[in-house]
Amino acid sequence: MCDLGRHGITPKTTAERVDVVSGGTSRSPARGTPARGLDLVRGHGQIENPSHGVRAVTFDADRSQVRGGNIPQVMAALRHPTMGLLRWAGYANMAAACRRFAAQPDLALTLIGIKLEN
Image (cartoon, rainbow, N blue to C red; front, side, top):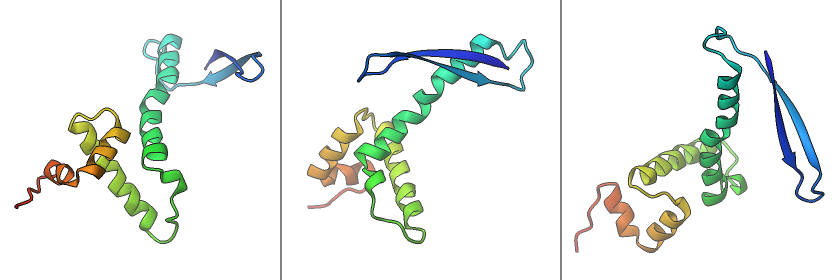
């Protein structure tokens, strides 16, 4: 068990705050050093937050009116592969990619392997 301190400044009041976070691990002391624990705690948001931000802001999932049955899970099942496909295609900015594909739907179809014939 180790305690980690975090320092921050509240933007509105500019008051300094200190948070103490306790953590434990089942790893041996050789593998579970305090420095490694701190790295894991600090890096946790780097994995979760970018995906959450894309879902919440770009795909506006938090304001979805879909509530009943299995539809929320179906929408999530559509959003997640879409994000993965866009990242695989090299798009770093999901909002810009969505705008581009909305304006040029034939590009979106091409991305998933459908070619329109004239």
